[in-house]
Image (cartoon, rainbow over the protein chains, first blue to last red):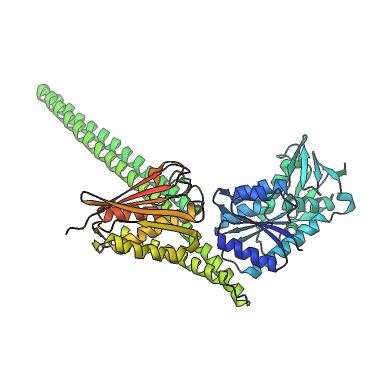
Length: 235
Length: 322
């Protein structure tokens, strides 16, 4: 059986057809028609992918994504939405969605994006030895396997994108990593993130690892190049 | 259905119109300040000139007449400038009100187009998925059934939008005497054919019921919108809908009741243009059309709901003259 996918979609015809077609493609599919049903479904066995509709009858898919991610940190997230405006798309990507697909879409396109997301999630799950367990980056203890970081005794979830960016910087600690390389490695070619998206992720990561985010010492900006991680240690 | 307060914050407004709105507000504000400054300058200047004339007259030895003339001139100037200032302020307030109304309307229109786009894209997604499955060789009755449902939803959405444009443009209605008993049974059968297992529609009408004076297309649109609302928001499937009617003086009241979850919040918000539930579904024109069409036909509508006990809608039609 293929990866386990949760479809959160209130439009019955769309949900049922997607479920049938994804099942035929070899995935194990579960359905939820509301945010409440999704919260119940997330308690079951581990999921590899969440397909979330943004407009739900009892909530907002953007808010729900964070909640579900906190319980299933390894699951990738793809937003499916009829809202095609750039603000929503940027919001979805900045929330750490692995992809964002505007309705109406071709099933084959969705299938391709699911495969890409699952592959990236799988790559992210394969950690090199020095990244296993917890590593200390600045003031934070980061557990890449659990997609979480601890600051001042409080654990908080990290999105896949945050993990991917942080891991890339950590694997090249002491060396500058260009913005283009960050975009290539953490985002897919069809997501069209802007350099603002990368900068926003860096701002969030700085809030996590820096003592004083206004004067960053751990993730430094290298003018005209990109970013450089200065401190990493095995915990 | 959970009603949200309206209309501020509806939909997703793009950045450009908000910027443009701020520019217009800034220009109007600047214009008002300049106008008031000009009025103050003019009043001061006229006072100074009048005073100078009076002083000259006094210097020529006619002090008594000069003082009387100065008092008259002063009263005239105070009266005229107050009136002028009042007109200016009234005009400015009128302009500000018009600007606010247009701004609100523009925002509502943007929200409306955003939600109509959403409502069109969703069935379109489903239609594309079913069509792709059929094109790839799948032959199942469910696919055809879903295609029919989605095409019906698109059709209703387009009809609603056109009806809204017609009503807002003051388009005419073709009112005639409709014998509700026989006519409604046919309409109910059509509705059941569309929604199939999603609705359990029961019509209980007295064959002796007087005919109503109404536009049959408008009454069909009203019923389709009420049923669509029940099917989408009742949160039970099949939703049970009961239709009954009674004559009351010169009116015939059609009583529509579903067994859904009812409405949370102020039920009077129902039927407002672009009024939508807290959930993102719906364009906010379905129940508005119910209210607007009833009023255009000289009737009225009343919404009643207790959360958990369904939605009840009373449609009061004019009885046809014999």
